[in-house]
Length: 346
Ligand code: HEC
Ligand code: HEC
Image (cartoon, rainbow, N blue to C red; front, side):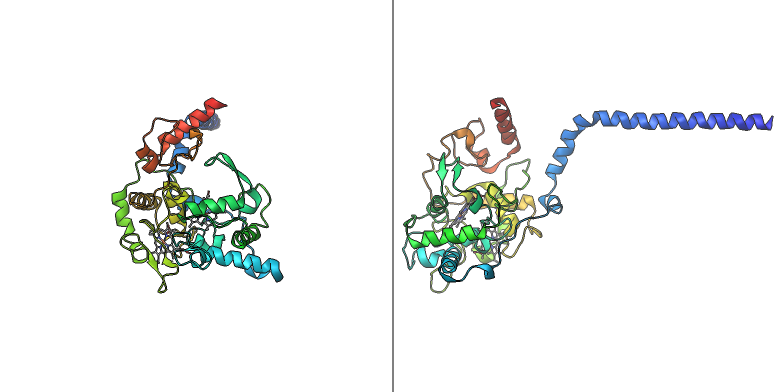
């Protein structure tokens, strides 16, 4: 009798465990089939994450060559002169320039930090291996000299130096040297600047003004920057106003500015230890971009309007969003529309 009861208990237990296992497996199976529709949400969730967290998983492949490896002799002298020109452009080409007075007094290095060698600081790693390059902005093939010239016209709000002169040649020699170890066609991921996650609201100049109080001690209350004693170059470059870059410059695009600032400002910041949140970076970008600066007629830029980057602040556009939304966001709806148009093209 007792034995009988025991074996009944056992049978019951076996049945119970089996049913339990089947239901657990069943629930798992059900959840896994539901995943595709869940995916979109989990994607959004990671996209909303602050860039700080996403970056921790990154491993970087590029490191600028050591300065001590610049060759001796004439070739090396040219590279060193090129570096000097990029670091202290204004001394040669600024309003008090020794070679020519053709630019606003900013240095290439103000944006191409550490003479174009800093990760996520608009470094030159990708240039040697990717030029000449077809550029949508001009709808044409552009050489390195042509690219340098366009930074003179826009970022330095000036004129380009003689392309056959020794200065442009030296800058090219230096830029080629910086990128010499990067294989052709490869764009290291730390070239350019951090790509920040989009906000789900327009970037806000009023909030950005508060963030700007942390920038002011160097860049000035009116964004005017600060010249050195001799007035030959900036100690702190201007962020807006008549001596700053013009509105045809790449830095005037909100995403470029926000990404640059996140990875490099306040001065001394690296992408590994950003000081600003994504939100603060977008908002301070909006504040700076709400201020006046020199204007460049850019009506010939991106003559194929569907090639315009979504944060290009001048119409016409291939979509129906306003200039204001292209200037300040929110960008998800524009990006979505752009992806749709691209899909339709295929
Ligand atoms: C106000 C900021 C600013 C200044 C000053 C500036 N640039 Fe640029 N430059 C940019 C931006 C923004 C880009 C676009 C970067 C990108 O597309 O990732 C760029 C792109 C370039 C590129 C192409 C980089 C690439 O990876 O394709 C070269 C070369 C270049 N600049 C050279 C110069 C030189 C030389 C000077 C000085 C004469 C200069 N720039 C001054 C902001 C600046
Ligand atoms: C401690 C001083 C300091 C502070 C604070 C600082 N910057 Fe800068 N910033 C610099 C210097 C110096 C450069 C030029 C870098 C170089 O030439 O190597 C620069 C360059 C820049 C540039 C690119 C060049 C230009 O003139 O447009 C931008 C944009 C910029 N800073 C934005 C900001 C913003 C926004 C903040 C506040 C969140 C900030 N900076 C805080 C010192 C500072």
